[in-house]
Amino acid sequence: MQQRLRRFWRNLTGGSDEDLVACLLAQVTATTEAVELARAMATGEIAPTSGAERMDGVESEGDDARRELILELRRTLATPMDREDLNRLSRSIDDVLDNLRDLAREFDLYGFRDEPLLVEPVDNLAAGLASLRRAIEVLIERPQDAARHAAESKKNDVRRSYQRAMATLLTTDEAVDSLLLRRRELLRRLDITGLRLAEAADALIDGAVKRSH
Image (cartoon, rainbow, N blue to C red):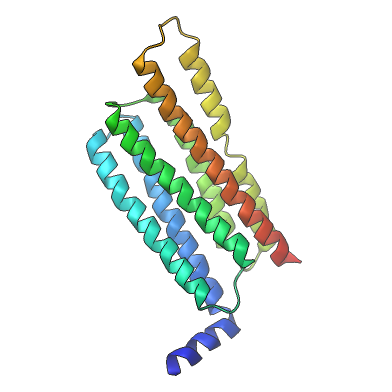
């Protein structure tokens, strides 16, 4: 009974908002670690097998944060943004992390030691993710600023860096072989990851705009 009363009081005073935001930030933290791992693999700073194994652990941390958010949603009366938008945001962040995990696995399976063409899109992904974090951090107190930061996140330039990398890859005089196809698959995986990040930004923008009205 006392636990229910405490939770009811947290709902009334906005404490549940902070709990949900904390879950989202935990997801972003795990995803940021995954981006850093992806960059280390692309530059050859970490062995592919080790990187893929570490990525699995980071992805599990992100899954735990998402599960906690879902549980919190079930027992929370008020939320910092529309429940549907909040779930979309969390699911899209999870999709970003899942694609980074797949990138690491494919990097290892395809036999790469490094891949310089991945560095620019990974850096742009990191910048977009940083903007998404800033948006989540101010969602409760400054939803209009949250929408602005989320819009910056959506313009993450992963697609443009992917296109530039593909142009570099496909305008060489080298014959189309298995290496070229494997490199293309890794770049495509990053392009998809950037699209999932844009979807997360869209969900946050929708929720922030509703909250500000």
